[in-house]
Length: 152
Image 1 (cartoon, rainbow, N blue to C red):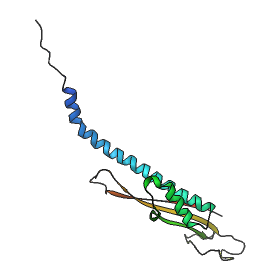
Image 2 (cartoon, rainbow, N blue to C red; image 1 turned 30 degrees about the vertical axis):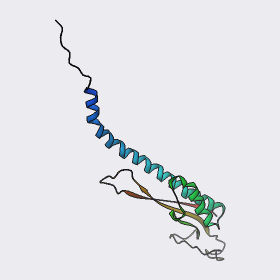
Image 3 (cartoon, rainbow, N blue to C red; image 1 turned 180 degrees about the vertical axis):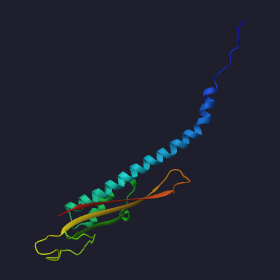
Image 4 (cartoon, rainbow, N blue to C red; image 1 turned 180 degrees about the horizontal axis):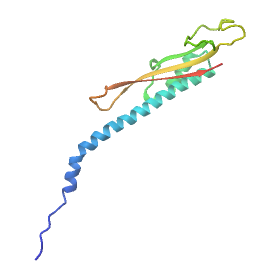
């Protein structure tokens, strides 16, 4: 006597159909998180490129902005996204964060025989839009990165 076997052909398809919404709910935030990391790294590199250009050409803030924009072109960086591209100085003994932007540096401004320390700085701010709207996160995130280098 032959036993009748039950077909299991559709079981895998039904299980996949039941699990698909959960897989999508895991995949979408993972994609957005990866995009955020990539975007933040690109904005960071743009700020560093602007500061590096300023290190070599201290008096050219327009060139610092252009270098940052050129480096961040793949994330759509524009000149309006480079909020600061400047040079400043402070005295080494100054414990505060006083930043002086008057150049040339006045003689003996830090005391006799003490040279001022000069820095270049680039700050880049760019808005990032998520692919999917999550109830616990805003649809647009603002990414701000800065780079600062000591010139002398």
